Length: 228
Image 1 (cartoon, rainbow, N blue to C red):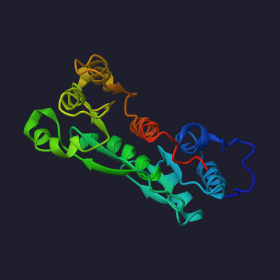
Image 2: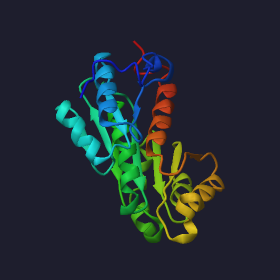
Image 3: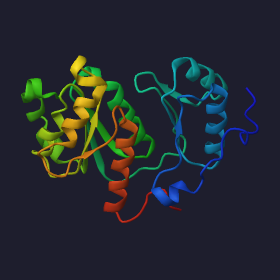
């Protein structure tokens, strides 16, 4: 793969870390393996951690042959280069309702890791067995931000937000039977949460939830971590 010149398909935003508190990341869907590899190499040269999301297994295999240090998370569908990760203050908990929600939760977790955040994944906390969630409340109350990932009727973020003081970011997933409408039911339920202050991102957007959480931490600390 010729990665020497990416100007024909990408113009990278090297100032994003200063503006937003995290560097430019790569949306891998729709890009060729050559394009992903070329962008990853160019970003790595600017000494920032590198993340590509929504990367297929086939594309990931091709990129990893060219960039041996790249790591692929098959469940999250993420490719990353961790060389320049810097530790970030603050702690974020990622919870998900069921095992079927794990790909979206893992996408959020990997994104947080690349941003240097201390984070933990707490799986299978759905309200169908609410005692599982209640048994984790003390852990959740210690988090600076909670990301709650759920499909079906999308109740998990509402219940969580009623139990913890920290910001809750809700992620609807496309998990569910016919009337879930590929996540639309969960999305609308989260937007109509009776727990005040729940933030909602797009369907299956674990990446976006993680970026929102990092922005919250940056403002809490009154400075963007990646500003040099």
